[in-house]
Image (cartoon, rainbow, N blue to C red; front, side, top):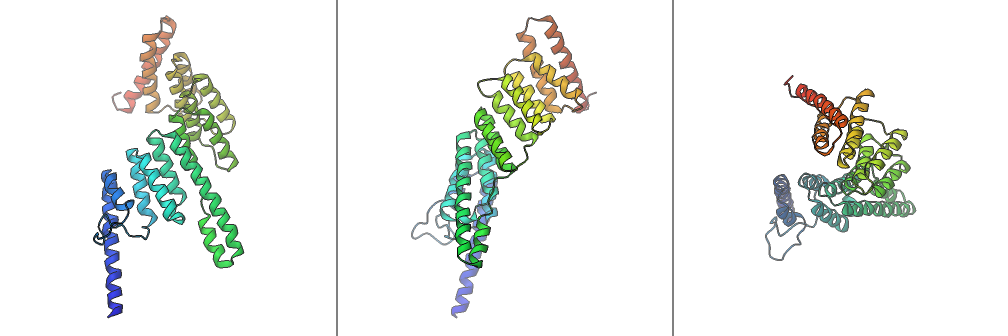
Length: 310
């Protein structure tokens, strides 16, 4: 009878957990973060029914469930909630956190335009790494079983997604000096500096106080580092020129991209149309007006092909 009761209780718990996971997934899909908070973060209250929102079990859910919530935070720009969840997990189930969880929280901060919080989470990730490295050292002194457990706990490292997400946040916040530091950390960590990272650095300079000149210099340095020229890096430079009313430079970069054999994409053409529209209004130079009109016609023709109009 006792064994049957234990089996029944185990089945009840599994059923309650399945219902809770389904409710969390539904709330994440709906962007209902109040309900998610009730299901994940609120403390248990005495007298609440088993499996109810106010009676969250003490055992952690699979990390995939938390990842679903963190992805919803990225989709809905809920950086603050992502950080609250991450810190909750770190304080209650620290070994559950993996690189992906930190990555999603940093990305959510970038989407919500909170570069300071993104930096805080990145620093906390590095603190977590140091703590796990210390646990690994302690495990070596505790024998083979301790080593196996500590090795798994120590498997936390920033990857390309981590750095790119942080760069995205710093770019949006116009923090070029910090973005430069992140690029240096990438190199030191042996992580490839991609054209995405280079584009984010260029954008950080464009959104900073020094303007297009530093953005162009950053693009040159990234190319020398082997980050590679791509439509994304060229678009970032064109955007920087447009932001600071460098109309002629924007056209020059647009033409140079094509001379280098890099095909502009739809976003490139739309950028040039915006540049041409703003430039024609702002300039009194007939020569620049003609150049802007020519670039606009080229971009409009390319977009006509894209949309099947030509």
